[in-house]
Image (cartoon, rainbow, N blue to C red; front, side, top):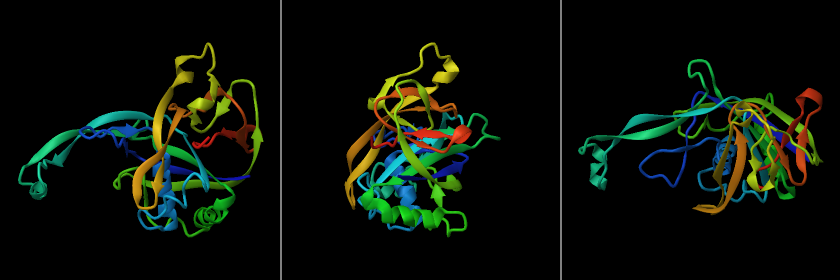
Length: 255
């Protein structure tokens, strides 16, 4: 097994929760569907044509937060639209809450997500295409990347390709990615509040098919928001990368 890792870095992020229609709430981590869109931008694939090629049958994806994150609401001016003709701005504007993900110190800190990509047997060709684009000296992303909305630009950093191994531990250990909730057996007992900066979210995972934006699956995950690994005991095997102080333990969103 091989795993491609890279960091998505930007100043702000917003991954809109699709079920909120009058307040722009944001997921803390980019959902799998968002990561698919970013990978499609790297490869230069047209809109709505990649849902099957980058789906969970072909690519396993993981993600984690490398820096402490917080959310804050800001009020943005939107056009007040009650009918199609109102798009000309004749109805004036209305202020709506807009949730933004940032670091703790907006002037100094960055939002940094680490993405993990591993192919199934049928996804090997796409995996190699991603590596050729992102590897040091490669052409880079075909289209510009963003952390959600187009004005929250992102760069790709620290690209690497790792051999990976499967491991099993019947004790609490550090996980650098989000962990599927169903796999969590226990969290550390006696932990301090700083060690348990943990969120749980239900994230969109896969679409029904190309050109169809109906959801086919969701991922319920636990993850750390303080920039440290999530300490947890999980059932079954997990993936381990690196050695010694550089070791990373991860689970993919699809598991």
